[in-house]
Amino acid sequence: MQGGVDPEDEIIRDAVAREVKEETGLTVSWVIQQIGNGVSFFASRGVKVLKLTFVVEIHEIETLSDEAKVLTESSLIKARIGSDSSKNPTEAIPVVLSASEHQNFVWATRDQVVAGATDAVTLDFASPDQKAVMLEAFDIQEHIVAAKASI
Image (cartoon, rainbow, N blue to C red; front, side):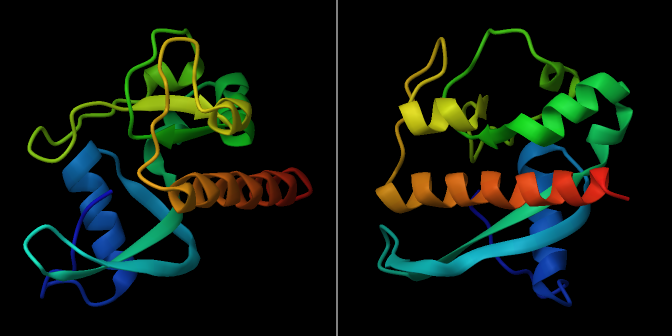
């Protein structure tokens, strides 16, 4: 997700929550962990950018049924590419993309990210690093789900 730090943001977690809300309409209930140290590059206008990636928990997951919540937390992650017509519990999560920043998204499983495709969409990653970050997010998510199950 593209974004930036606003002068109103006291800490990076504030920026993450604000950007998620602005770009997807979803509410972050917990910024769990940053993945890696970020990727630095020059944007098209010559501006140096540091892209940071975070695993977050969203409030809207709490509105799902217990069965859907378990499936969602254990096996799905949002990829901002394409669209997917397959039926799954995440369709109940009200994602509203910022039209000025994103055109589409798809919910994808780990196996689909590894394969580079869902049933209906080819997942074109901007770089091998982006795909690796998504797979690392699955690893982190699996640890979180296991920890929650042991409580």
